[in-house]
Image (cartoon, rainbow, N blue to C red; front, side, top):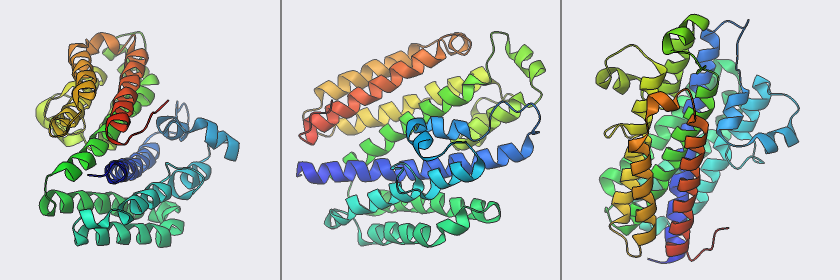
Length: 316
């Protein structure tokens, strides 16, 4: 496979995953803010920008984190390469140049999804239509990945697609935990946090829902929603497909079917051990931010090694 083709497939997957994750995050945050009182609220729309790592660009374009400003920035601003519109446009362009690799139905699905977003994004910015608009984005992305799973040979091209998907997913899960936990953990116990904030559990439920993890958490953890348990589930669970540990395992698994995989697999094995060995209940109250920062540096290193080994790139 040509390095250019592999690179385009990898980035197609990353952009598609980014669009889906952003749509889900915005929808869940919208509903959370409807459930919480405005008085004494410790967060609003700003965390959405922080999770995406786009604070610098946002402040260059806007002065305040108002709902309208954040919605425009995350949904349809072409100046933001991580907006849903930009992500789907870049995914579509990467697929356009590699159409012969994919089933025809997959191209039609992605093209139709892009055209839907382009035509309906103005309606999607309104509160009354936002939920339905974002739900269609999420379903459209999932339908695309479903087509590939059922109608595309699980060969090297499919491996590169999954590399991009799961690495992007691991990064998004870690970013969400880092930003959303900052306002929820104090130096006290879980019980003292609940007493300090009567909406503590609702906010942790929203973290789970933003990663489609709420139902699986309740099935497997079987307790009320607690911060430390949420962290453990989303970092270390071996079976949930959006936990950091699971995502790292899938990236390593797909690398095993590709040549020149020694360096990224070593880095992934180290990251998996780091995640699995973490004492999550201690991290919850001290050191979580640094722990996740270290993970994200590791994700960046894996990306550099993939780009260097397969795309012929030297990433600084």
